[in-house]
Amino acid sequence: AMLDRMYMRTINEVYGRHIFTTRRQRPAESLDEFLRDLKALARDCNYQAISAEQHMELAVRDVYVAGLRSNYVRQRLLEKGAQNLEDTVELATTMEVSFRSLTSF
Image 1: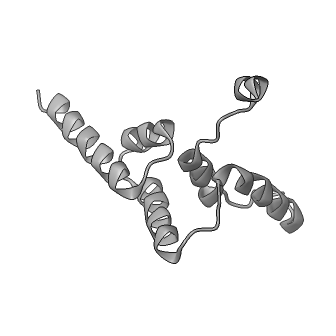
Image 2: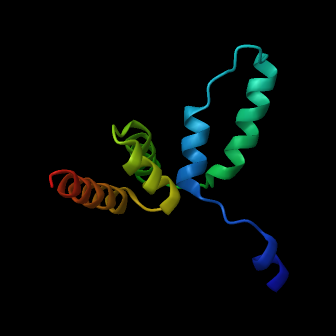
């Protein structure tokens, strides 16, 4: 058990889902290769049996992070890891306000 904690990598669900949902087929990549890579990437997404409401909240969180205009805020959120939608929005808002304050001087 102790060795497992030391050597098993922690999955950053938000980052994993971002990589998964933004993955596009490469120019020379076959359909089979693309599908195989998507299945491998899905392993880092921490998908679980959840309610439709929970699924919707996580989907909104993932698209919110992926669609942010600010690369800085997106990068910080991806580094931060798994949070719920409310925490993600709160953190993004705090970072945006702080960033605006810094750039206004």
